Length: 260
Image 1 (cartoon, one colour):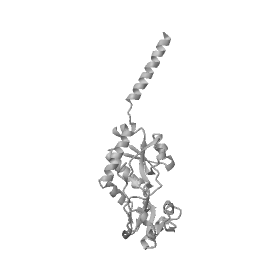
Image 2 (cartoon, one colour; image 1 turned 180 degrees about the horizontal axis):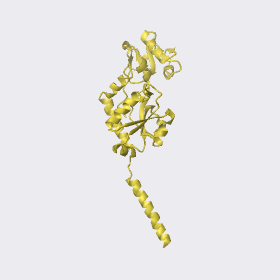
Image 3 (cartoon, rainbow, N blue to C red; image 1 turned 90 degrees about the horizontal axis):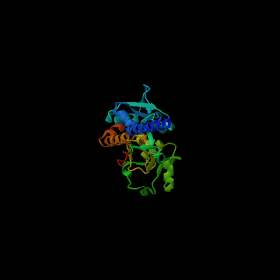
């Protein structure tokens, strides 16, 4: 009889545990936001103009402005957490934050661990030229002088295609070489192009090689991830993204693809 009572008690405990698991919120982050909780966002504030600390000691930059815009559309307050870049994904996995918004490049190796949003910034290699030197495809660059930073990805891209190369000390110098007419084109990353291109140059679309920045969330927060993607699509489509970029980039950057 005592054995039977113990068995019934254990069965009841197991049943209650199973019910608790079934009744728990399937997206605890989303449930917390719906109850008025903050959207917890991790950033490494050491990569301006995306992530930095302002003169008041507050996290600022393009990513911070984007995060505020996303939170406003989700009707949630924002709580920023400054975390070193190497610890950003771990913070999501440990449920210390809901999102990483920190110029985070899409890394396919992490798709089994975390969820990525649609791209919100294109940081890949781009072609920059004077307006009169528009080209329809990279193959048309044969016999044109390509300015690149020595040892950069742009340098490797041009070498792989056996293009005439002018190597410079910095990517900004490569852009200046195009502006002065010393080179026909520059191949640099899209962030550098948007920050340093002289006004008389143009950035060609699409990128030569794509390297999108994405928002990182937990695999256990599907409702939050869906809401973020929907809000991002609105921001990219209604002119908000262009407004946010104008505050940080002298040259309009390439918009990211609207296809997830």
